[in-house]
Length: 368
Image (cartoon, rainbow, N blue to C red; front, side):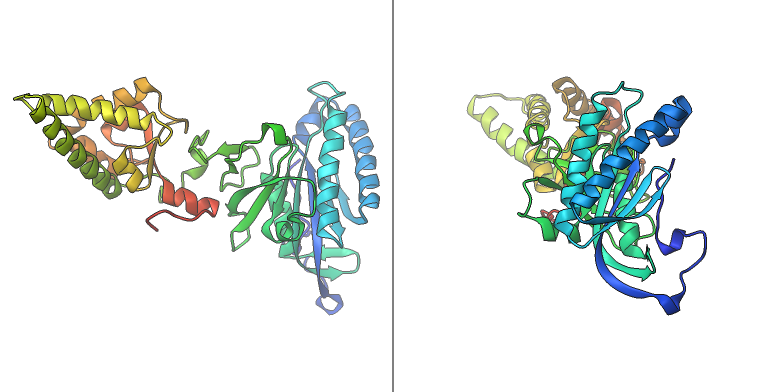
């Protein structure tokens, strides 16, 4: 069953009666079962039994943390809390308890939830809540990892340092029907297995899980494929990086070869260039010095660091990109993912670190 929004823009009975409306600041928790339609298709009676049991567990947690269930619509819950701290504690305990219960079930019967929490201004009409504050909680739920909890920046500001839980900043999220990007923080479910580089993509696809963007191991890069392809390093940025690297290598190699008495410079310099670029692109930097200066990192088409063989193939294939007339290099200005000929041969991508930083809400290095 798809996630449900309980805001005014999604209600089937039209807009609320404005004469009865008032506004307030409150904390919203939105929870939804992952793959509910699949579970119902496999075993209706069994699924309903588990859902009823899990609803009872959630109901007890709501009472314990002074929350109020606004709606239980099928497998979706909207709840309200006066305290952000209580809401986050409730959501975290809910995932912990349901995870423990899932471990006692077969893999096909497990019922996982996603949870989103937001502190926001809402409109009140009787017992119902409406507005963007509600919808943000629902949208965060829709992009939360399975069995995970995602909270907005407004909620995080209130709980930081007040609970024994850890959170990772996962970037400013562009979510459906919300004009401004929403800063989001993910609950660290297992601190022992925590990767400090965890991020999630700027994408409302609920199937997208964490991406390790700290080392630009992006996993599936498809979520970054926007219409302008800004996540990929453009032609001119690459050209400047190439000029910096080639200038450095040409000067260094010429001086070294002159010292040891080599009469021919071009051949050894090309070999040195290929080896240098291969070593740098497979190092932790994932970039040569020129690319590092220009805010570029090299990854394979799966978002992982280049293998030594892949990096060697990439830099060796530049011979083909040079001939004729550097056409293979100019391809980077026209291909979908800004790939030059040697990138296509080696299945590599050049990532614009500044755009990536901007999407994550991190400081940019050099360029806007």
